[in-house]
Length: 485
Image (cartoon, rainbow, N blue to C red; front, side, top):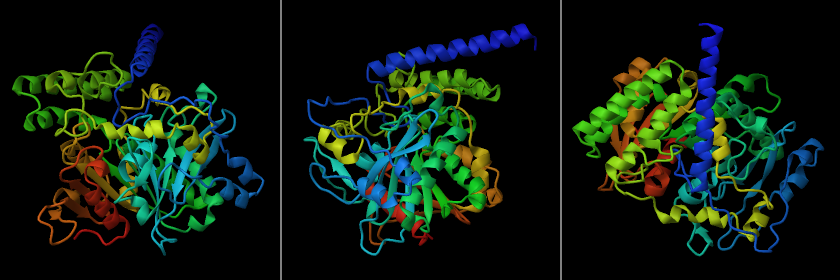
């Protein structure tokens, strides 16, 4: 290719990225739709109350003041119910002042000191993990009056859960320099690894516990990224992590294989007709070609216009065809109102003070998404293969999800290159119930060695919200190693 053609190609890519940045600004200014996962965009004013100061724990760690760091990180009283927890900032890049915010909940049940530690990462890109905490499976539920109660099926009842706003620029996490934002999954893995090694130095009593990386949606990339980073660095690391495996819910892991399944899925579920299906198939075929040509931004633009509707200023094809904005659960047309309460709650001055964020911005994730535009349509399948050969892996789906539907996941899993691939293709599928006496089936499971694929009935993309008991039973069967079969 001539220098002139290369220059034109680079110019076209640059213009495309610039256009998307402008669209993102426009979309987020009007309270944008979510990209694979909710982004909170409402930030309440401080109204003169004292929000306290943000707590940066890395300086305490560096001077050996571990006890002081732990004490300072204790979360204060929240309006409503309270459980023991720790929160604060870990600096992952001093040059750019990049800081990841965490909120950690030790297992609530007695005698669970040695229970596995779960890292939870929300998707997005740019979705705050406070969504997982307050809406899905953390100990707290936020009510309309902006107080909290306790959740019936909290994952933190039996397991210690570490929620991190990831990558920097998400939720309460931040960076002072444009260069601090993650631009690929290597950046994500590096920053998370820095945060984890610091966390285990501040809380060394958990370092020997089994550790699992978990997350949903776009975290279908984040989870393999941090897992693979641990896999590569653990053997020579000073601070070792007792990494045992990972769990991914409705994960966007391999867009090239997944994209081609949308037409048939939308048609077979009655959301589009034959003519509309032909259009979707034609568009996704083009999208796959763009991915194969490594035209990542153009592939993203196509997907965004077709279904995602996050950046393009006009309604997506999906929205026009179905009349619905909710692609998390095809049984409901609009997203539930109570999934938004938490974003107002965490920005109340009294809560800000209790959770050690001070008056720092609660980001909507738009900057994070801008910097990861080139990453969205790339695959993490090679990492997945290595991890499936070496660790315990759970990949689960909600049967009613649209945006990363169960059949979409089924399309890519047989193409993962690992030693159990042939066995997986012929593995039997079993149904399971939470209790043997239940009349309702909870879901379906396929197991090959230490790899589990699960589909949960009656739930969508935000699976623990839709089906809390079934989701808890699933994660408990996986982590306790009692299994399904």
